[in-house]
Image (tube, helix red, strand yellow):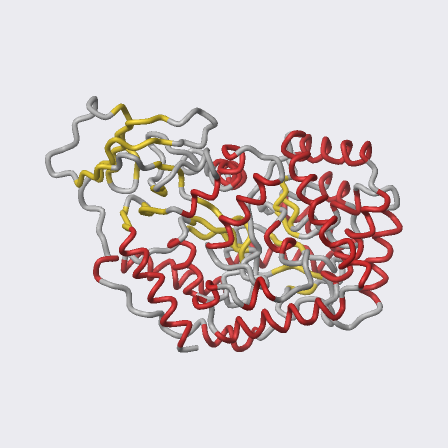
Length: 479
């Protein structure tokens, strides 16, 4: 929606950042008396000193046992808590200011799940600018362009493939353009999906995304799909009448010339509640765990679809950070779903959301890998801010605060093959860190209480974070 407008807006120069943000990590940064929560699963370590030289953690130890260099920048972090930088593992980065909002909320890495064909060039330009000018931005892992079914349905900005040959060529072309992984989408045919899976393996690229309507969740897992997004196809797979539900999704999509797959999928999920099969669910989760199939539930988006009322959204104070055209797009999306989702869906919506939460707890207990992701900027999903909501929902689903923190730190590093450099607070790791005012293991909502963000060894203190937010607010008010 409004892709042309967004593409033009991306070319507009961002607001100037203050000189205070152009911090060169020229000397060691030392945090003393800090409580380290390293996200390995170990207990919190109080009264620690953490030494950062360049972009790396070079030493950790009890305060008093490490002697900082004479020219080091020493910060007394008594009463504060240090965690790894957070990752949002499902975003769509349409605006440069989204990146600023991520950093201001402690999100130091994102997995972009695909957008306009120009995003490869866009990300390359942004990365060069961030490196040259030392501007704050999260690390970006990107799919670039979605691989979907034939043109005429679904996303207009996708790589449309109708058969095996076109699917293989799409994967090859995306690799040449620099894609970090392949994003598969709902309208792929069986032939095109399995060709995409096979060619992705040949090109040594992970593939992830939606479970297409023509494929079951179990088949997608066996085919090697690395992660499934939004639980699409998963709830139907837990029902006794899975084949019937998938058939209804396919029929609804086929009968429309508009991209109705979200509506069709939500209706199928709601109907799955009436035929839920616990043994079948257990077998599916065991398959996911055995195959290493990760899940990115994007619970915050589903929560926004669990109530037909507008009030929680139209008065949200975070709207001041969102440009007017995006706010209007959200209103239209909300109105469309309110109109086109059936009464039967809304009658079940709260019960459905509770089942989605219960399923996340069951997945954690079954050893299924979980990743925190928000689907930014789906309607009323706010860049950076909404990741903290996602973490609270994971705790509500039954995960412990540590398990939840790992879903946004250690787990993304494992998923991305970056465990040697990111994901935990350990010697030798890249210093992407968040300094908190309160303990997230006592209440996961404390991840919001950010005293500072450390990005590649560069300290961005609370004052600078507030300045970044003010600049984004000013830019949003002009658009």
